[in-house]
Length: 330
View 1 (cartoon, rainbow, N blue to C red):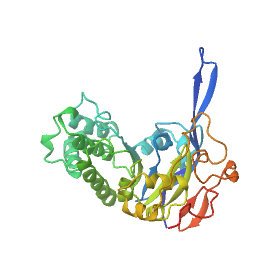
View 2: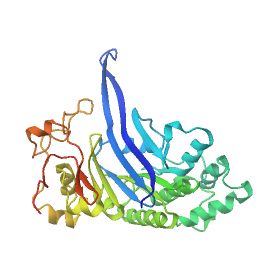
View 3: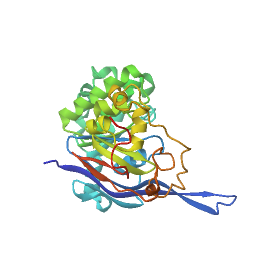
View 4: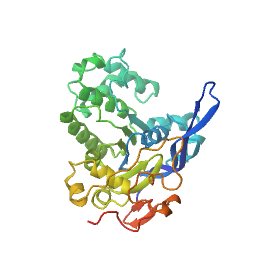
C-alpha cells in the first residue's frame, strides 16, 4: 500500500492585483484554484502545464515558500500550517527544493564548501569536525569528485551542469525524503539534461526519495515521471500514470501539450490530427466560468459553461472534461 508523504487538499493561492492611477481597482489572480494532489513515498509526480498554469506557485507552497490562501497541505499526516518549533524544522529538513536556475540559487560570495556546510551546521545534523567529510560524500554522490576540485571555488567558476549538481547536493545535505524540482534542467544545455535526469533517477532509487517534478517539457516528463498531473490556469485538468497520459490523453488541453511536442513518437502516433488551440489565453484575473479551457478548446460545448469535476477513467486516470471519450480517435 502506498504511503503518502505529501497531501494537498483544496489548495488555493490567490494574489490581489491593483490597477488604476491610485490603485483603486482591485482584482484577484487565481494562481492555484482548488487543487487536490498526493505524493507517495519513492514516487515521481510531474506537474506539467504552460507558463501561468500555477505549477510553480503550487511547488512553492509545498516547500513553504508560498502561503496558501485556503486549503491544506499535510506532511506525513500533519497539517503544515499547524507545525511549530522542532516539528517545523523537521518539515524543512525533510522537504527540500532544487530551483530552475542553479546560478541564481547559489550565493556567489560563498565557496561551494561553505554553501554545503552551512545547512549542516545550522541544523546540527553533523558535528563540525565531521562536516568536511560529509560534504565530500555529498559531492561524490552527485558525481563531483575529487571534492578538493570544487569545495574552495565559487559558483561562477563552474558550468551550468556542475552548478545544478551542486544545488542538488545542497538539497540532499539534510537527508530529505521529499524533493521539489522546479524545471531543474530547462536552463541547461541539451547535452547535459539527460545526465541530470539520470542523476535524479539514481538518487530517487538510492535514497527512496519522493520527487515532485515541475516541467513544461513533456519529453523530460516521459523520461522521469511515474504519474503526471496536468494543470491549466490554476486548475487540475487531468492526472494519471505516465503511460495513460501519454498513450491515451483524454482532456483536449493534454492533447494540445502532446501535439506541441513532436519529438514524442508515441504522441505523434496517437495524435494523427493535431488538436489546435483557438482564441487567445484568458486573463488570469478573469478566468472563464465553467471549464477554464473552454474559450480555447475546439471541442467546447454549452455544457462546458458548467465547471467539470475530475472523472475517474479507470486505472488511476482521471480527467476534468465533459467529453465522454478522447477528442481524437486512436
